[in-house]
Length: 146
Image 1: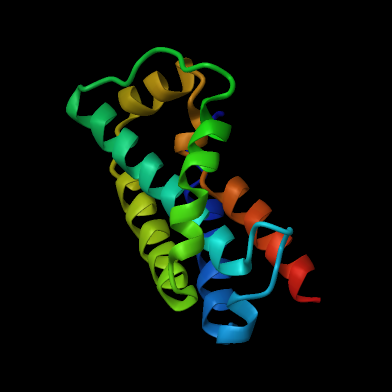
Image 2: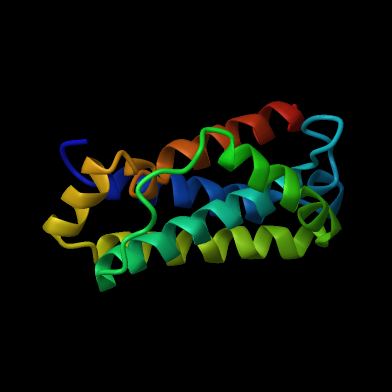
């Protein structure tokens, strides 16, 4: 990663808010997969944006995260949190997704060059690139809404 993708993050956040503004309650309840609705995908996206926000903030404060996590870690978190995400009302899942995207982007914008370099060197650039997971989630939702 040569630079922090601030413009891409902002564009994906705008795409997210535009989609959320267009969704009705029936849309939020539509299945994306047998276990995941549009609202569930939005809740998951909110979690991972808040995760990125929290870890970037820790990096900025000098509290470095553990150097490695096992490859199954993200899937285990998703599996563990899925029932909680499914229990959220659709409109609330949408609201927290928009709020989390905004908060993550604001924290990423504050990351100084040495912090960015440390994050990238530790192979955690996904904390800075929020556009890719947002767009992936939005593509899955768009496909489900067709």
